[in-house]
Length: 97
Image 1: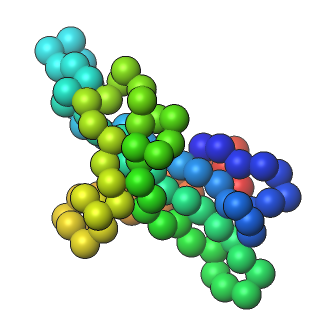
Image 2: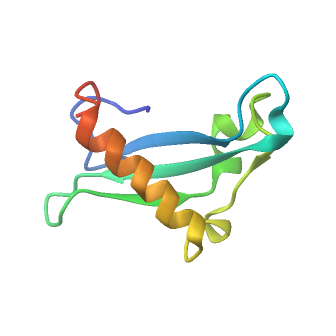
């Protein structure tokens, strides 16, 4: 998670996720990066939106085999999984907000 305190309305906060398999029998090719932008605009409810992971530093990480574009996530079953993860993080990790 990356943000500037007091500026969640603009430009917001970035949340980068690495999803996939972990362990001794797998490698970076078994994981992908997904990036989201969180904003708290004055005139709307706070929200996360998927953005292009290749444009973020995580997109060049050795931990991943691919960095997903927004279009590879939005409108797919993967989006449900991603937003379930984000909801769990948002609701349970007091360090973030």
